[in-house]
Image (cartoon, rainbow, N blue to C red; front, side, top):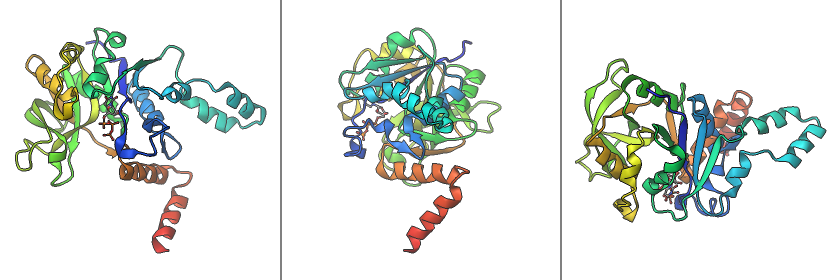
Amino acid sequence: MKRVRKAVLPVAGLGTRILPAAKTTPKNLLNVFDRPILAHVVAEGRAAGIEHFVFIVGRGQGAIEDYFDHGFELEAQLAAKGKSDILADVRADLSDPGAMSFVRQMAPLGLGHAVWCARDVVGDEAFAVMLPDMLMDADPPALAQAMAAYEAVGGNIVVVEPAPPGEAHKYGIVSLGAEAAGFDGRLNAMTGMVEKPPPGTEPSNLFISGRYVLQPGVFDLLGAHRAGAGGEIQLTDAMLALLADQPFHALEYRGVTHDCGDKLGLLRANVAFALKDLGCGGEVRAAIEGLLDS
Ligand code: UTP
C-alpha cells in the first residue's frame, strides 16, 4: 500500500456563519491563539506525514498563499532588529518550495465540487481531505490517527466523533458494521451515511467530523456534478456511491474538535489553545476568572 502524501484543504466556502469577520479575511486565516486556524491544520497534516497540500481557494483569498510564503521585508526587519525568536516562529509555518498548490474553485458549488477541483493535482493516488474549519486538538494528531487506521485496513477512512446529546440530526451521521481489530472498538466498517437524519431516525450518534482518507475513484463520482442537499455538490453523496464498490471504515478519533466556522466554536478554540499554552495558561485563566467575577 502506498503512503498518503497529499492532502486537500477546501477553503473556498463563503463562511456565512462567521460574517462579518470573514468578509475581507479568509475565514481560515482568522486567529486561534497564536496563529491562523489554517496554520494549525497544516501543522497537523505535516505531523501525519503529508508532503503536499492542495488548497481549494476562492476569489479574494490570495492572503492564504502569501501566509505560507516568505515575507521578505518583514523577515529582514525582524532579523535586523535581532528578534530571532519571532522570526523563527514566523518561518515555522512556511512550506517547502513546490509543496503547496492553490486551485481556484471558481464558484462555491459545495464541498464535493471543491474536492473534485483537486483531481489533476492529486492524480491516481489515495489522498487525505482536511476540513480546516474543524480544528482537532489531539495527540497523536487526528490525521495521524486516520493514517494509522488506513495502514491497518486500507480502503477509505472517515474520522467520526459523537454528536452532542440530542443533536445528531444536525450532522452527517454514519452507520456501522463489523469492528476492526486493534483499535479498541473505535474502528468499524462503515455501512452507510445520512446527512441530517430526522430526529429519532439516526443510525448512530457518530458524525463525520472533518478528516478523511479517500481513494481517487471518488473524483469520477464527483465529476457527475449531481447537486444534493441544499443544492450543493456533496462529498457525502459521492462517498455513498463509492461505498457500493469499496471498503469504508469509520474511525472514532481521540481528541477534542473545535468548529471554527462558528463564532462560539472559534472563541472556544481560542480559549482552549491559550489555556493549553504553557507560557500563559495561568494568565489566561486569571483573565477569564477576572471577567467572570466582574
Ligand atoms: P461549510 O459549509 O462548513 O463552510 O463547508 P462554509 O460554506 O464556508 O460555511 P458557512 O456554512 O457558509 O458558514 C465545509 C468546508 O468546505 C469548504 C469550506 O471552506 C469549509 O472548509 N467549501 C465549502 C469549499 O471549499 N467550497 C464550497 O463550495 C463549499
